[in-house]
Length: 342
Image 1 (spheres, rainbow, N blue to C red):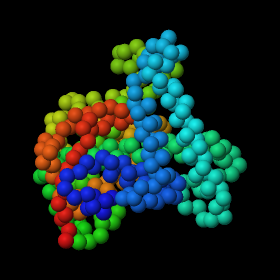
Image 2: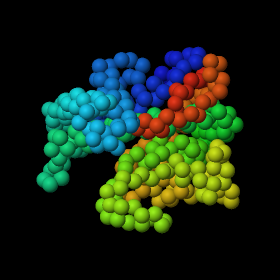
Image 3: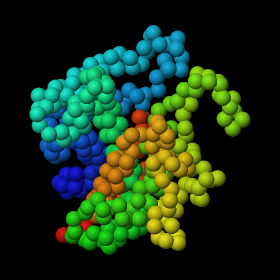
Image 4: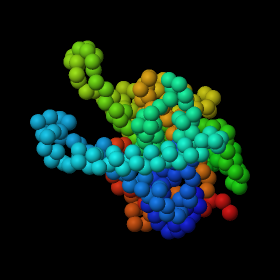
C-alpha cells in the first residue's frame, strides 16, 4: 500500500487504495491469496465487484421490509438483484474451496484450510463454509477501509495531531527504522487517536445488525413488545454530553491518562458500553481484534512514511456522512502526501 501511494504522485483519492488493500489483506488471511495492489487481477476484480454489489444491496432502504404488502412487487428490484448475486458468490467461493481440497496434502496456512481440517461434529458443509468465508471477506473488507479513511481525514484536518503521532513514531521507531507490531502496541497517542476516531465516526453507528425481541419487556420505562426490531444507536451514545466532555470536539487526549501518560482504560472491544463500536457480548464482531490491529498498524505505517495534507482541489475536508452498510465519508477523501523518510 505504501508503494502504491508513492506511485500516485500529486493529488489522489485514498478510498480505492484502501479498499484494494483491505480486500487483499482479507483474501490473504482467508483464501491464502496475495496479489500486487498496483496490478490488475481477474480474481480480485471479480470479488471486488461482488463485495461492492453486496454493500449496495444491504445498505439500501428496502421498503418491502417496512411495508410487507409491497413485497410481492419488488419495485426496487432488490430481490431480483440478490437472486443474481448469491449464485455468483457461491460459485466464486466454492471454486476457492475446491482448489484448497486439491491441495489437501499441504500444510494448513489459511482459514479455508482450517475449515477443511475440521472433523466429526465440527465439520462444516460446503454451503456453511461458503457462508462463513463470505461473511469474513464481506465484513472485514468494508470496516477497515471505512475506518482508515476517517482516520486519514482527521489527520489532514488536524495537522497538530498528525505531527504528534509522527513524533511518537520517531521516538519509538526512529525516522529510518522498520516498523514492528510491538512498536505499534507501545504507542499510547496513536491508540488514543484510533479510539477518538472510532468514537466520532463508528463504522457501524447502529451496531450493524438488528436484534429481535422475543418477549414483551420494559427498558427504561419504555414498553417493547415481542417481535420488535431494535438497534443500538452507538453514534448517539458516543456523542452524548452526559457521557463525554465536549463530545463533538476531536480530542484524542481524552484517552490518555493524565497521571501515568498511558492509554486511558476505555476498551473499544465491548467491555465498556460508552464506546463499543464492535458490539458487546456474544453477538460482538468476531473479527474486532484483527480489524483493530490491522487499522492501527496501517495508520502507523502511513504516518511514518508520509505527511498527509489537504488537496488544492478540495482545500476543506468534508466530514459529511453517508450510511450504507457502514457509515462512510459522503465525499471520498482527496489528499496530497509528502515523503518523511529519505
